[in-house]
Length: 191
Image (cartoon, rainbow, N blue to C red; front, side, top):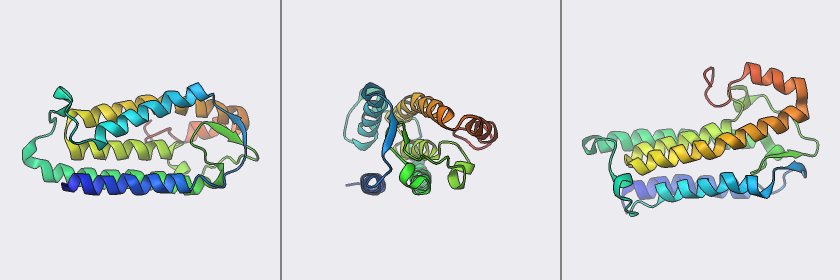
């Protein structure tokens, strides 16, 4: 197994195990997105994970490099650093949400509006962290399939983000509208 296989599988696996274990004990759900809505963002995420987690998968043009082979080590380690930072941001945000977290778009019973910690930097730090994780992984792979996976993740998270904002706006009204004006959605001070 090459270093990519070992390091990136370990990072993503640790993140995934934490994500599953930490889902236990959350608050009860008061309102949830539809099953079809949930499938619309989970399905593409699975496809994106397959694209980056299957190095031996030959996909013709998608297996071609977009980064030069000569600097492979530089891109690999830069990608590893970005991936680790992204996954740690997602974990920090998940910990900060506490029992309010859910994998699907929901409003919990006694839902709290969290605006501190990573939520003071961006409104959706878990999504930012995932996007950074996929960006770093794409850079480490250096193949077009990594960039396609990043695009798929963004395309699947964007409608989820919009749905989540609608739910939070309905739940918290003016307080959430004010929060949206102060804090960017995904990239601090930019977007």
